[in-house]
Length: 484
Ligand code: F6P
Image (cartoon, rainbow, N blue to C red; front, side, top):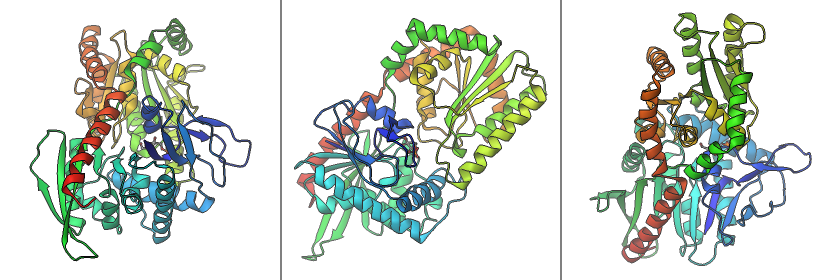
């Protein structure tokens, strides 16, 4: 099997020209796959995180890593430009304004070609290839054209936009054609599946029918195309379904029960000044995460006296991300300014009310923070899944802690026992944070039990197994009914 993703599971820490040092890659994709992909026959195709030629890193957990080189123009136009300056904001409900730039698009197409040919070279005959994320939406069709023998799955880790937003994209037809080269297309949520199908209807410029659902999990799209050679019509089928990603529940459980972690959690609370309530946010420093909305709500709760600045602290971990992109820089400045303002108004010497850190925390440090926090705040304006919410739940073996969770995060479909909130509604956000922070031990336990049962029963391993089992069964059926 071959995994194809923009990033390898490890990346070069220093994007400049210093010595090559490898670190685990940020974000949900790498951490979810790391826990399930540990087969020495596997190959992972991806970028090292550094511009210019870099040798492939050594295997990780036995998996061979194949580096696709990106030069500095690729990084600018394919990664910062089309992937994160066009697609990312467009697919996240225009939380920032997407830019439509022909040069970015050409580079995106060229880099997708490079990924397709690197994959084609390392895939064994009849291998299964699993392509991930919005950076590589053209790869399924490009790979199909090179290697019709392969079974191809594509999984989108981020939301799919509503039809009327997707309509803005000047290259909408090409993107759909690219994705539809896969045998199976997976999304995080059922609503993404519906949005994708709607855009296929309107923009794929092919004759399409949606077949009645046979199994509950996937929908089947049938396309009728004219064969370029014979002129006869050929039908192809693509399955589309929701496969919500998850985490390694047992791993977080084990880690959080270690004596060292519990001691570290207690020490953290002591260092914070033994407050009555610790609120926590853990995010990439991204404008889609709703960090400013959360800070604003917190500030107002302090100002009106609903939260006491002498007894409450907010710990905000915000790991810098995509910091060459102007919208990310502006957002980082706004967050820093707001933290300064809140502390300027409410902190006393030696006792900040917001503890703000941009340091990447180790898994052990993060787990201790989860255990130390009375309330985790996930206030994304739009989010594919949000695995931090699931990690928090998995870490709370003591059945304590309250989860405030945005309705706009994919996790809200499953974690319905959380304190669900609309982060765009400041009053709702204030009310919900207050309610979670002041809830009784019994109420927290009741909710956390349900949440833990949910995360325990659907792990990262289940996610990967369900996707790959469906992919293999789908390929079996489409081979017999289509021209592929
Ligand atoms: O959430 C989408 C995503 O692309 C993840 O798949 C990835 O792990 C994360 O963002 C990190 O983004 P980047 O690779 O840009 O640092």
